[in-house]
Image 1: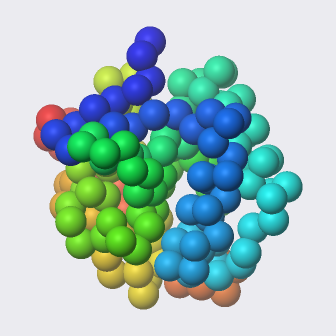
Image 2: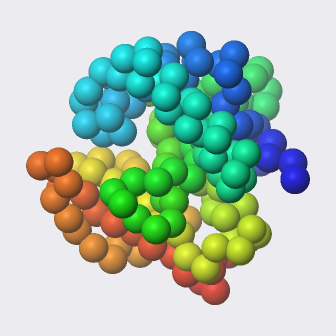
Amino acid sequence: MNLVFETQRLQLKPVSEDELDILQHIFTDPYVRRYLCDGNILTLQQVEETLSESQKLFNEKKLGLWLIRTKDNQEVIGVTGLWYFFEEEQPQLVYALLPQATKKGYATEAATRILKYCFDVGYQYLMASCDRPNLESCKVAERIGMSQVEERIVNGNPLLFFRIERNRATS
């Protein structure tokens, strides 16, 4: 199964070992880590562990983290994927863009492609969670057809949970 995806403007490719520095750059960017990492700065070892887990998940379950590149110049602008959070049975949709790539529709474009993949491989629903103050991420979830289903406090932060059923997804 080919796990490299293309959209109109983007290429999504599983993160590889030789892209550790790129992944660390994304995860340590202040804009990204504000919500994705609860403001924490991930150490190189933590990013290595995340990369290793992503590769393991791709090998075992065909899911993990994809780097998001623009097709026109191959610039890495963020990360997206399916990842296990909060002891859930099923992975959740995740997306994070570097600040220079926001407000251009890239997150919606990448998330839409991962949503399609998720349902193509047989998932019956997909969840995503966003910090309540992260309005941009919440809007992406809504744009791809997700509806808010729950609010929880996790690690002291209010999180909104979104869900879409396979039969509601549009291609």
